[in-house]
Image (tube, rainbow over all chains, first blue to last red; front, side):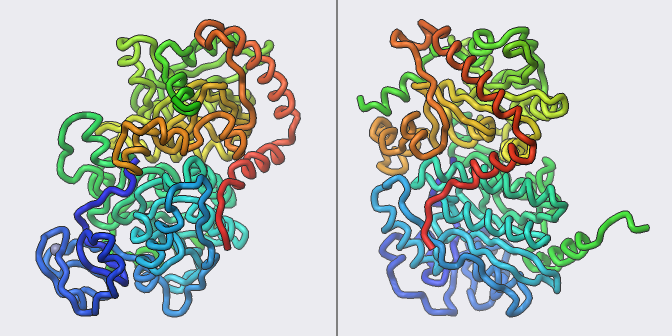
Length: 292
Length: 265
Ligand SMILES: [Zn+2]
């Protein structure tokens, strides 16, 4: 699976905006606002402040990656987000060397406890459960905490007869937690099966990149699946595929546009229109059909 | 070589009996069924209907070969999306006709290729996890060899998961793990030990319920020994599972996977 590969993307987080920061830079104090950052899509320098709050490159329209809190800020109606399980954090189930240190560093870098933030909120006046993964936390890898928080969010939605919206970004299963991380795929999918059995709406929103175990579980199970422009979505990592088939992959491979063409996403929605689209979909699903 | 590395080597041995040999040794009247009804027939997944102790069951499993030529035909036991869709078709068919399902797992993982991605490898596996969670018939899964990642999990979401003495199951290959952790795939043996991939380790953390022994002279030299134990255990377990109320069966299956996770609050 595509785990923890370093990629040429700019990752926006609250501590550092340097492309491909080294571990030392992670520990550097927060970069002041109003910096220039290089767009990973067009390689031009853009003024960060000018991109708030959507972080879309003004030169090429490329979407920068967002952390969970930035995503919540542009998605939820003001002051409606109420977090669930905000204190849950990782243990070290298989005694992986230095896992505690890795976790502490990721918490410091991302400002959150683990790779997903869950809660309830309103989007365009519609009540929903929301889960937002965060690529700044160990590439959004899914271990026990991510699996448990997402499953609890799904179960909360089922118990309260609510829809759930999940924003995905993930490098796959969290190998530091071994086989237990693989079990999270089965756990979250089983939760969604019950949510679906109850006739409730699940909206999956694919953001860049969504790969490995998350693509092979809840990311692919939405009643409706939306994707941001250019978002990478796939089971196998590109380097793994290139290694298997011994050739270069074509441009655009596994991107949202490719997935739309092959029938695996319903629509590609630019970030500026996402909130509206989600609100409309939620509203349409509060109606019980057949009432003519 | 440490114990985990020995198990890893045994699980991958090219002479290790395959799913079709297990089906032949355990069941009667096997009729193989082909195709996913969407795209193709994936030779890396075999399945069909058979009888066990005179009763109809559905069997599905990952198929490897014993020679390079056979392995090329079977894609080295790495299924494509159509393989997982075939599996799910046969499992839904089993549900319709109230047949229990037995799955056999022996794969280093789902295939990683252009076509597999074009046809939605992620979606195909996700659908197996999702559908099996609600499948209204008993499902027993048996790891007969390698169990690699999501491609193995797709067949292992049932009520009971068992493993042969020299089976293994891991989130990624020990080689992959070693290259990420130490940047050295050559340290796979060490990784195998750290990753807790063996049947006793998996039994201890609840990932499997039962270890099926292999004969001292080796599984390939005495398949009947293991097959007769498996047959007896399957009949016993299916008897129990088939007596259960459907709601209880599904609730227990849900809890089986719901329990996994170690975290603090
Ligand atoms: Zn740009």
